[in-house]
Image (cartoon, rainbow, N blue to C red; front, side):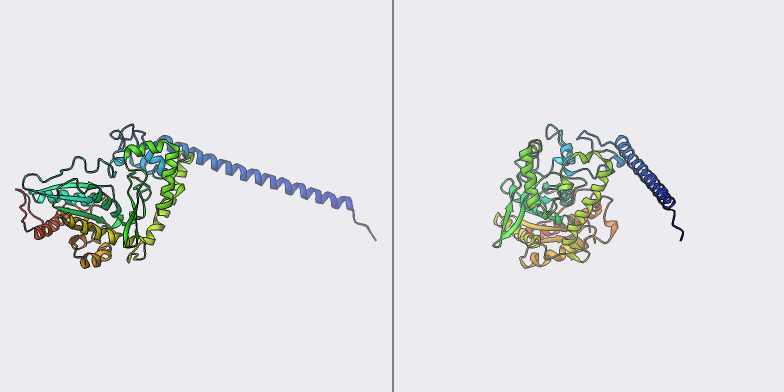
Amino acid sequence: MRQPNLFTSNSKASLLSTVFQTATRQRIRGCAKTALGFVLTLAALDVAINLLFPYPSDPLNTSPGAMNLYFDYGRSIEGKVTRQLGPTDETSAPIARPGWLDARLGEGQPVEPIGQNLLVAVYGMSFAANTGKAMAQLDPNLTIRIVAGPSAPPSYSFAAYEADRGKHKADVVLLGILASSLKGMGAMTGMTWGAEVPAPYTFPKYSLEQGRLKAVQPQVTSLAQFRTTMRDRPQRDAFVAQLQQHDQFFNSFVFEQNWLDQSALVRMIRRALAKSHQDNITSQIHTPDGFNPEWEQVPVLKKIVQEFATTAQKDGKLPIILLFNDRGYDDHLYRLLQPTLEQNQIPFVSTHEIAPATDGTNFVGDGHFTEAIDRQIAQKVLALINEKRDRTSTPPPGLTQAP
């Protein structure tokens, strides 16, 4: 019997092994070159974006450009607010200044009626401020005091009202509640739930304890203190720890500043994650069908409304709750609070009857009501004040009252 040629078989196997190893090495080198090229391309793109669309370092620059702003949205919250800070309050970014619950609260606002005017104190956000301004235009016999924070939630507005008690001689106090800001009651600052354009002002986090409001006060309560805190590591860490414990919207990756802020591509990824994080929390608070009655802050909100009315009446003032049902919220805020308001006989005005949130023509591009709608809301509030205070409104010459 003929024996197999072992040498020839081994040679063939060795040759095949060599060919296979060579092909494998070539594939690995090819993949490595492709991966390296991809990484280098991303790096070049990252550098190019930073060079072409840098965000201005000047805190007072409020017009950075659309593309500059777009590629900066994903910067860490801490990175953004640190950049807002100038050496003084006056040299800090405009968005960093309003809303602080410190000794300067209400500074520059009237403390008593002018002449025989009625003084109305308004607490809330820009929607409430716009209503107050429209009221002054419609009725020259009104003096308006406005205390507001950017997109302020009810917890801020109530805390501002409480801090402002005794500092003025208002006859009427108005608490504005914005549907889209209700979720901010789960936060302690305008930073965490407004990550893209954070406003650093802070406010208490309320809860109910044996039927009474209990407040966790923020460790930082003024812009000057915030400036000091962000430059002192132990103070900064203590503040961040408080947010981590009590702020429902706090997310370490979204909030904390690090070297990743230097990458435009990482900023874009962080922006997507921040939006996903906020949307996830928001979906637990509000759905297309309305606000979730099981959310822990709902009974807190109802208690805030009652406490506001009770203390105002105790001070001899007329309390009015103003419900702003903005785009995407239909009449959900009204449906949430209407039983509480009516059961406790608290005067209120709800915008869903005046300007349905489902009608886009009632709003301008940034989400606020049109000036015409502001006037209609103001007229409704004035009618309620006149009814409760037995007075009449007289529009200034050339200005027609809203229907």
